[in-house]
Amino acid sequence: MKREPAVAGYFYSDNPRELKFHLSTLIKFRENKIKAKGIIVPHAGYMYSGWVAGKVYGSIIPPDTAIIIGTNHTGLGERISLFPGEAFITPLGETSVDKELSEDLIKAVPLLSRDVMAHLHEHSIEVQVPFLQYINPKVKIVPICLSKLSLEEVKELGKGMAEVIKRHSDKYILIIGSSDFSHYVPHEVAKKKDLMAIKEILKLSEEDFLKVIYEERISACGYIPIAVTINACKNLGEAKAELIEYQTSGDIIKDYSSVVGYGGIVIY
Image (tube, rainbow, N blue to C red; front, side):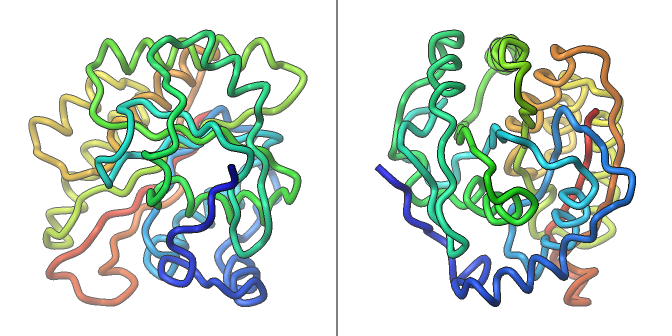
């Protein structure tokens, strides 16, 4: 099966020319691009979080395959769901699923389930695909949608993912942790709490990151994808992290009373 877009015309334009133009304004290519192991990028509507996401995508060498780890907003499907279909469709065309990598992940990580339902209406993975299509039209993807996991499950998934990536050293595979940060709190509260969490991401400590999320009650929707991304990148070898950009929706629309936070981070 091929997954039809669920949020085109809502989170981003459903007109191919408009979408390509919008992406060209959001993605500013950096001269010295980073060969990243993983990235953390937001997944809100492009008018809100696209500037942060675009700055990250413009900072990295385009991957051959991207493992996109999203969060399950809908509650449908399996807790740890790998999309078993052939492709994702966006207004820019079809992007194929990397079936070889997907099958190896299923074999290596018993936690993973082949499941369509978790992906049908989920935006956290979909909104990353046009960015990837823009920087590499031939890119392939492996979409993984997660619900809440224990720390042990985070580590098991991250370790298994890294082991499979190492076996596919003939291609450049990027891990994408798709997440927004604080939701619907005042700008200064969001910024203070989010930067506490980002500090632990930059230290590459998934345990301390999750501790801050729970203790400070930070409403970052994709904290599990972030934790898995951190762990997988560390298992790929020595790693460092860099904060590329942090903004809130208040920075865009100038209403600071109730905002959503967006962080863009590169792990290399």
